[in-house]
Image (cartoon, rainbow, N blue to C red):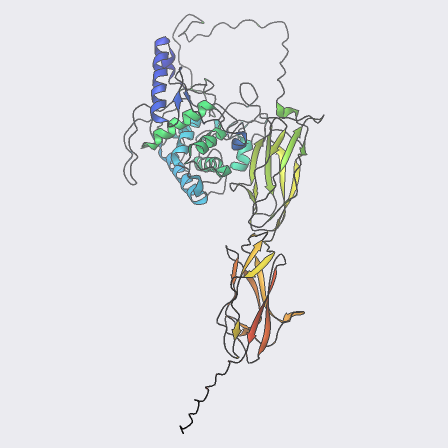
Length: 571
């Protein structure tokens, strides 16, 4: 739906022309990269994301309706500095105090946890404006909880996506269909994995602006997007609600808020007039209806009359309820593996293989446009790229959903990635994955200097080695160094060179060693007792890489002066 101003601008051809001109002017002046077509609708050439970029064509909101009102044409007042009173200005342009605080707190948190995302708080404000009119004009309590639930329409497939209930009505009060919930309009199935505790009260509540703002920030920062670049910014916004007009509306508010805004008291904000579905169905749980007032007489059924038109008598013919057309999700019978290879990676490495899952009907036919959720389960710190443990991907025309790349953490062992169909109760498909310890297959000294020492002295050079695996640096690999008895006897020697522990005592085996980020390992200084000869130092790493180094302890070579040649007397 194209963005519109208030209903008053849609009365008559002249008003329509004015509205189109206003939209064109606003889009041209406030949304970088956004152009205007002949009908005054804003467009963006690079706005359409690739399927891999968005991952889910129903977005965070289930593509629920949103407010289409655009910002005022005049520039907003600059934001006040900390400690100053709220600046005067239009309530339409201002942001309620608690809501504004939630956006800024969420952006600050993301700056620490995901600095590469470059999330501006103004983007959260733009989405909050479009999704709920800043929590219905800032109708929140001191803790950020909305006064009344903010609910989108039933996602029953009639004009919207078809998403059957996934939360038992816990969030949206509907046990048949899902509905978008809260000031940032998350559908329950998305909130299940995207929810965050933004106010540190131990709960993740989509009806709390602090929780919802932080969740929205993490949602926008997944897939490693950098929101300082226009293409990633567009992809992130479209992943929230996959609509070209939605993108343009959010970009307009983002640019407007970037120019400056002002804080207004909670509950005094202006609720937008227009929605993409042309109604206000996404509204808080209604309060009791106030007593009706006497109506003004009028002709029944005419405009301006408060008297309802007569209700026609019911028909004697029974009506047959229409059967809704099954959605692709409704036809899924099971999930099948789509050729996923063995999933294994060393700690800290990226898995080279990705999970592929195919959605099929009972007859084995592929089902496209189905949301498949991948969830990492088990005692592991492995995540998908972007740091999330859950990812939702839409199947392609072949019915296949490919999960994002897995990034191994430091916890070794086996874990599970479970694939399930969003909005459909079918048995999930489990994939086993393994994280192994870091290993090296080659060790080499970084110097070829001979290692020698005199009895009772210390070696001038410290032993340093470099570890590699398949030719690449092997960092953080565990290692052990032992002064062995002989090439055929790996037990620790009882004489010859030695290390010193923290108390200065003699030790000939060092454990708990680890290569650094460059694969280097530098051993402590070596000392020699009074025994002379050739000795062996053996270094081993996880993965089986071994290096044996020769050490020589010998007395210093004696130097003698030759006598001066005698001179025979001359005859």
